[in-house]
Image (cartoon, rainbow, N blue to C red):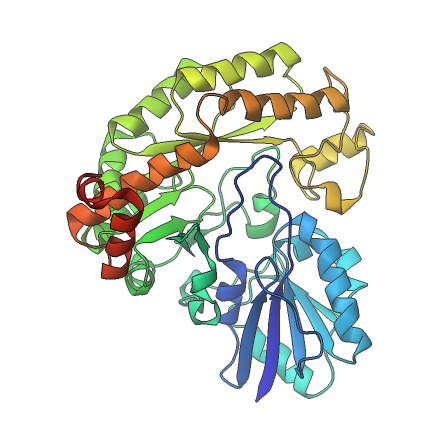
Length: 424
């Protein structure tokens, strides 16, 4: 039996964002690919402390974000100093493969299904390869199994006593190729949906009525969306996701299936965006706008008018970030070519620090405008209040459907009062 310690390095939340922690998805999906003779334990360093002296056979470091890589390298150094073999994986490992290879005994690039038996056999034979490169060789999507959520301490993932969402995915790949995004490089531009029956079985087995479907976009295949949502209706889950297709039948099915709110990119002040948000709201689906500042067509006045527009269209929440040129994106290639990248200190690639030279303002001014956007949007109603309103919506639905567990129902009555808990 191999004692394998899987670690998720800590990372800082966005400046001005309410701090809460979701259970990481990459590590639990990866854990499901490990062979039966591997005993895996998990540490989320955002909420737990790493015991570097714990006797383990091998350490895996799963890095999702660029701002995790330098911490991941430091963790690896501590274990390797103790003679423990370290393998890196995850999205950020793929984006920073050459650098990360210098800090571990092995790096794994790509999707792990069907591959870890060979990796572990190499480990047992003391012949780990420096690089296992499957980045552009995706396994059959049918191999994706149910994530190993049993490795998580679910009690840690709550906000002020309120249980957060569990994460699940229904597809991989993305047919879009957006300017700031690395998904086309990581997962390919072919949309690869999991068999719906496997996705539904996984969702049904999750001991949480609140989910985050983490697919890059559900708006990839109309018929697939409809089929997925129809199958989800009987599960009576409440879920958030990235965009849903702007189609009345799709939106109606999504609402019936429990769509709670969506993360919707807001990139301009057009009537299209105004109507897009309105149609979500007409179907009872909340909207958290994801707003990227610092694009080359934006001036200081454009950003101010955009924030006014967001308030006008009644977004439920907004998350503001600045354009960040992550490796293997169009943004990185263009800004690097134009010599506009100001630093390669990956700890600063947090999406709330300006690391490039904007076209129409100084870097300091863009940083100032980021703070202006956060402060102005939440001036009259703090983010915590807006989050609370979204949570009330899902609690009301759970109580109406009688899907709230007794412990949660008791907590709701304690927090909101008996009469209000019955009416929210």
